[in-house]
Length: 294
Image 1 (cartoon, rainbow, N blue to C red):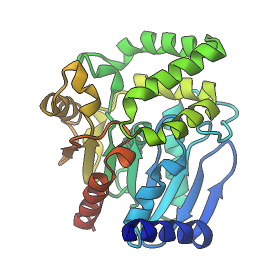
Image 2: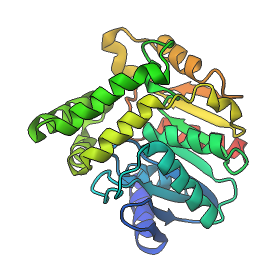
Image 3: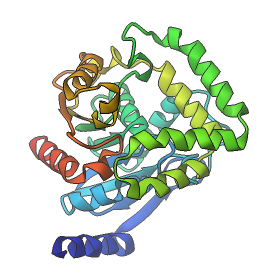
């Protein structure tokens, strides 16, 4: 109870006296919280920046959180026009933000799609990025089941998926979106938030982002990254389908085989949203990693 009261007090302090938001609608919007080592915190598909709020609080007072809200997700205004390739466009906005704010080799923490963006940033500007924490994300999602899949080979399927998302009836689209969330969260207390974020996300942005994730293969490109990298994975949600920690770790290890010095850790119980399902484990992993990369 004392710990909870302390956390609530810290959140209240952060929310009222230390936060500033940078950016304009249709582009990245970033809330800056605290002082200390700069840490960019990037959410995943359809998620709000709020997904990182408790993690930011847990890392205080050593870091300055830059809580990123991507356009088009969780009620944020969509980019107009929508970028032809969503991820590289967001990568460039993130790099421009870091440069404009004079962030010296910031740490980058990214979840899911945000993890892909963190990798893309470190590939494009290896000397400008600090340590990376990649939370349940892979360099090439299209190759999870078949490692021989290429970006060119995945494109027809990605095109078909995007077209289907854009033409689906609203009720069917929302039902599919909500069904996809069921296996992503063990702590069902946060499910109403995820459902609301999905409903408030711009459909065209979601389709563009998913398409971009499926046609950008970073497995070889990660060899250019110079930042220390920690990958935090989940596997428990796939246990009913026969997955084990060892088999899931093998998928991560294969996809990150070309990333120099990468460290991969697997949560024992958390599902995709590890910041909510296994928070103390995640906080400890991040704290320890950032401490060793000072």
